[in-house]
Length: 346
Image (cartoon, rainbow, N blue to C red; front, side):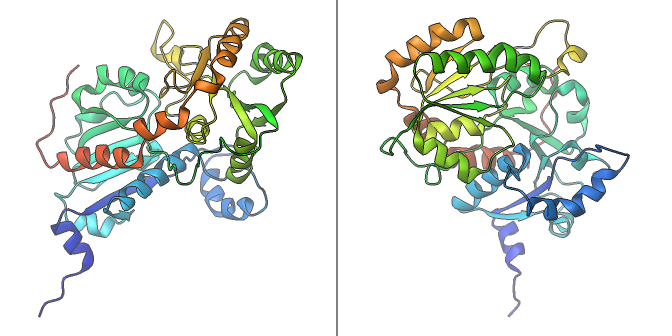
């Protein structure tokens, strides 16, 4: 009797998902120092309690967890299996360096992550191997589709509501947790936005706590959400926004700065006018209230407080950001690439 290797059976049964992942990498102090950072990063991570995963890594981890949870067999960076099965799909996720000198012939679904703007790689989808390109936020789909055409597909990372549980019955001693994720022109925006908002909240008698992106770990954040009645979310824009969605899953409503535009300094390279974007791309009236700037904050705060007891943010997550839905979208697109390459529409 001939034994069949489990991987061969998973491939034959179309139960295998072959994923290739490359973490964010960038030279910082000198040329090629990213290679040295690969070696020292694990040691550095043992010495601090800040966030240890990038957004690339968290999104990839949620994808893998969702696929496994709903019955798929996931193989990561398995070139041998992919090479032995050149017609079987693969998924390429993470930093764009994963595409450098890519030599496998397999039909591929790209993303999430990779490029911040399609004109960084305008001819990408002309490669006959590359069949689909996944984007997260609806505003990103609007930005990518004119260049990548029908190959551009919307996807989201599902929120694990067993991990981020309903915290509404926990004892609350913080009125507003302020999540500071300001990334560019920090000193200017802190002076124009963060500090005035903090002052307004304190002046109205609210108890506050400020947490800054990258300067905390998940355990600390989860504990703070349990203590908080609401959250103020300050970020220029988000491709998904896992942190504020984790707050929503915890039944903590969000008062979010949503300026309406893509403020990455890259935007001027590709457009003469500001590009529409959102800091809360997955959001509804169940989740909270948004405001445009510090001047608009008082109006938003008043509207938020009037509805504080009626928000249902966790309900929004359980209906719109499920792990099951995430896995279903990904696998439907993944196995669709057995079909001929889609036409590129310019």
